[in-house]
Length: 131
Image 1 (cartoon, one colour):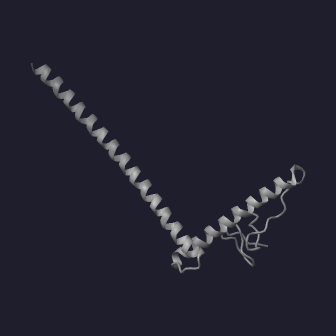
Image 2 (spheres, one colour; image 1 turned 90 degrees about the vertical axis):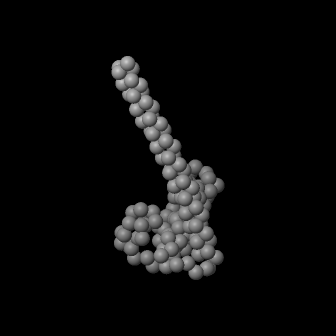
Image 3 (cartoon, helix red, strand yellow; image 1 turned 180 degrees about the horizontal axis):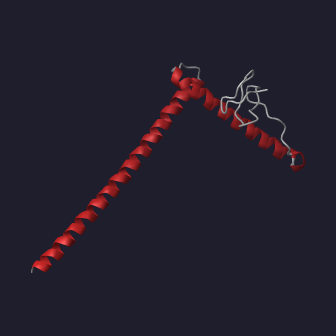
């Protein structure tokens, strides 16, 4: 009987450990799900403040640089999209891209492609000196 009691105890320990592992997996999934939901809320907060910035509202200085950078990135993407559309309209013979100007007329960094405001002396993206 001692042998059977020992086997029962080992089986109980294995069952307990399995249940603990299952519970920890469920908790890990809940943690990941909650973090993802928080990330979506953070994204909405950022979009809200970006829209405040675009509408001319006052944003905190800590957020202002991020809003300006986001606008530069979106302007750069829009300029690239316009270039694609122009290239498609012109046909395959003329698809060699001319140097693109930024949305504000400053061009783009030759090193990393970051949009540049007119008169910029150093790239905000990589720090390269602008000629």
